[in-house]
Image 1 (cartoon, rainbow, N blue to C red):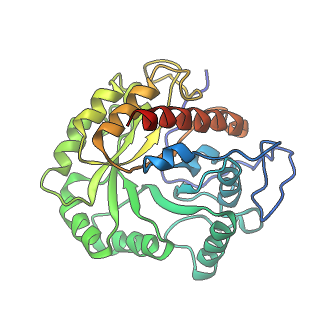
Image 2: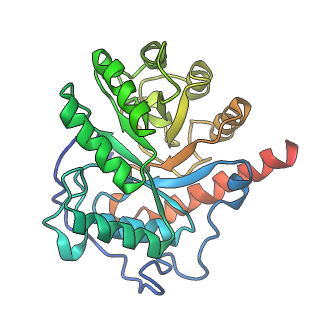
Length: 301
C-alpha cells in the first residue's frame, strides 16, 4: 500500500510526467479527452467554491497544476509552498520570495486559464512578525484570501492582528495525530476569543486517519470553518489512501449535508493524495460526485 506523504516545506524534486494528451486553447486544454467537464455548477448555486489543492499534482509544476484544474472545469486553486513554478522556470518555486516578474507570470497564467488563486498552504507563519508579514504581503499581492497554516498557539494574537490589517484569513489545518491540531477540540480552543479571520481548514481525510468521525468534527467547528481539504478514504486509520469521493468510508454526502447546515460558503479543495502521476481521472470522479450531491441538496433546500 502506498504510504501517504504529508506536506512540509520542501523542494519538489520529482520530474513532471505528462499525460500524453495534447492541450488546446490558452494552455488549459482538456487533459481528460472528449468534452471538457462542466466543473461544479450545482455547488456554485449553493455558494460553494470547489477547486484543487495543487499538492494533488505535486509531481508536476504549478503551471501544469493550473492546467489540470482548468481541464476539470474548476475555477479555484490552492497553492502550496515550494512547488516548481513551470517547466521553463524550474529553478523558481512558489513562495513569498518569488520576484515580481514571476508573480506577474503566475497572474497571467491564472487569468488565461480562468483560475483564481484563493488559498496558500500549508505555509509556515513565524513568531518573527517581519517573516510572517512577508507571507501576508505575498498573499495580498497574489489576491489570496486565506493562509492555511498550523501556527503555534502563542502567536495567534499577533497573527490575528495581521489578519485584520491585511483582510486575509488564517485557517488552522489539521494533520493526523500526533500533530498539535489533529483534534478539532484543539482547533476550536485556539480560535476562541479570536476574530472571524481565524478559523479552520478542515482536512476531512486526516480526521479519519486519526480515527475521528468527520461529521462530528465538522459539527464541533461550526462557525469557524473557513475552508476544507476534502477527501474520501478507503479505510480508517493512518494507512488509508484517497479514493474517488462517494466510494470510501468518509460519508461524503453526510459531510456535505453538515456543511450545508452551517449555512456557509467555504472553499473546498480537492486534495487527492494517491495515484500521484495519473490521478486526474479520479479527481474528475470526485468533482462529478460532489456536484451530484450538491444538486440533490439544492433541490431539497
